[in-house]
Image (tube, rainbow, N blue to C red):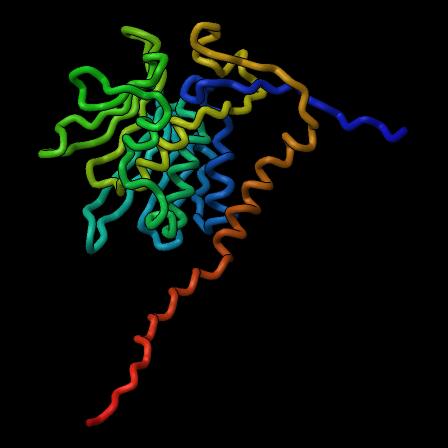
Length: 259
């Protein structure tokens, strides 16, 4: 009999917003290898800097105990002022990756939902009383845009376990393209669990009333190859030729009889 493949124990954690941060390479490696973002290297600084090929976007990953660990700044364009997005240390990397994947694939602007609240409304999130936003079913995550439709401001996604127990916060400047914010909220509302290999250390809480953590054995090769498969998928997406627009339909010919 052939040897059984080696397995490793992994945890499938739900809800996603309480799954812990995960490995930063899930974001940085595909941006560099699949999307062509260049990186700076300073061995004396515990930070990562990645810039987009057109030099309009700069992603900074820098440990900051008092602030956001991930910050993305995008330069102004003819049709949009400069904007930013930032994410706390315990923001799951899969949610940030949904945002950067949408950013690096402009075609998603035509297909992604334009209302960041839409994915929440479809997955049992409910309106947050008096906050102009939505709250998760477990009451630990909030998506808000203070100011309302008349004077919209920045978007805030806040996860907390109670008063004075913050977990993480994501912030999107008022000019951040809505389809990018919606990509983030779609990943946030996704009911599928996230895979973690160090949940005992990374989860913000082990309270079984809030977090479901199912441990199972998975072939080690699958865990080891997940990042490479992600890079390959994004590389293929980038290399795919853009869809050709359909040619305009010609009006049907009509016969004319002279009198």
